[in-house]
Length: 336
Image 1 (spheres, helix red, strand yellow):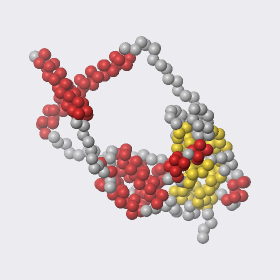
Image 2 (cartoon, helix red, strand yellow):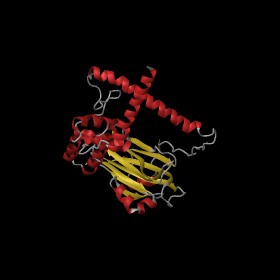
Image 3 (cartoon, one colour):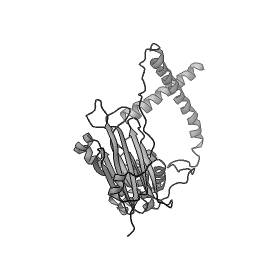
Image 4 (cartoon, helix red, strand yellow):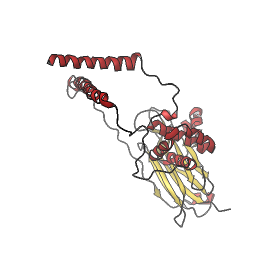
């Protein structure tokens, strides 16, 4: 009896391997054709919404944006909510602008997000209830055999202590953004009485560098936001080697988000990379003391490079930043 059970389980496992791995994954794998955006997984639907939002911000074509979002079918609203929840900084602002023209609203904190394909009524009948435990047992056997082989060859077959040790790189993290007084040379160019001025510093190793600042008038009313984040990296490995930063301005009274791209000397001289980043905003060569101006319907922002240093190593000279300090000053434009 025991021998019969063992033979049955072994036959099932072999059949599972042949049917799933050999036939299903190798000889005759499933091939998808003519799939549309509505068939994407949630992760790629978020990326699709971001691409639609980027295109809308650049062109301002509302009809085109609505037509592209309609390709998500009934899952368009759910994809928009996922994109609003899973983006930050300038990407979140662009998705918010797209949501505004699409008539969508940001999800309330704590509200569950609908997942396409989730939930539904139970069913399947007695046959399904019978097969599920058998399949689960077979998968468990495969996992146990595979797990045992992995543990043996990965740990037991290698003498203890002989594996290479991987040291963590010691890097300095970037500083937090702080509010400062507006420099006199900036006010001389842009005019008196700025709304506010911020100062922020990036240091090599701060791979999550993404600063945003709220712009409020003297009465405390919200006018918009501005900020700076990583725009492009170069090379591989940790920490990331930043070759360009995105400096952006959002005005609540303007549907556009204005973006300028501060690029390293090497990146600015690379026509291919420069053309790629031009889709995000006007490319600007970063240099100490250089000021970048951005204007919207009611706001004006000047971002000045206070200090910067290039990193060194195997990458081309002057290709990535070791450190960059920016002063960002915002003005409310005169009405009329």
